[in-house]
Image 1 (tube, rainbow, N blue to C red):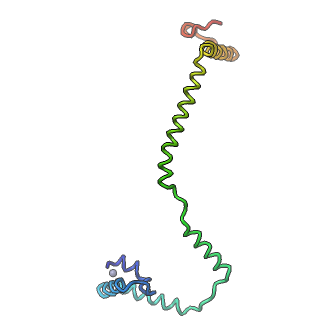
Image 2 (image 1 turned 135 degrees about the horizontal axis):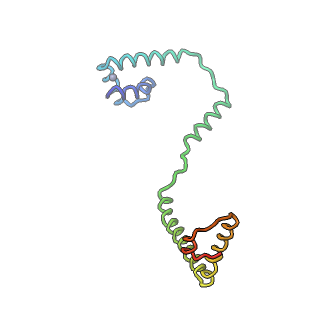
Image 3 (image 1 turned 90 degrees about the vertical axis):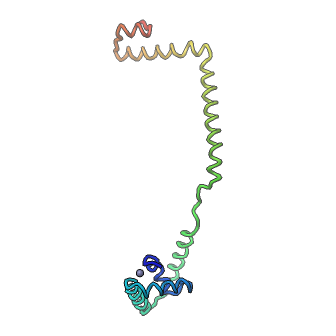
Length: 150
Ligand SMILES: [Zn+2]
């Protein structure tokens, strides 16, 4: 028994909620520790003073309210179970596989000869049209590297 445990058990001892062995350990510590002895006396005085106060019955609606609060607080919150975590791995694998498959089929679609022939040229024409609207004048080096002609 140390002072920390004594303090933790103090009110349980006063209210008679400790086991015989625990109670005996408390008493043994009390005899050896003047600091805890002072705490023990203060706690007992507080306990007695509290019991001299007049008792009032709580209103019925408050009792019901408190019981509901306690019940809500004690119901276990849903946790992310381990089996869900385990199930997540294959689901993630499937998602990646699907993503890869979608990517492959898309690139294969655009890889058809006509698409290759059309798309980049159309894009370049569009870019150049926009640049001309913006009054852009390309350098000589640009004509050489892109092969672009006005
Ligand atoms: Zn002590």
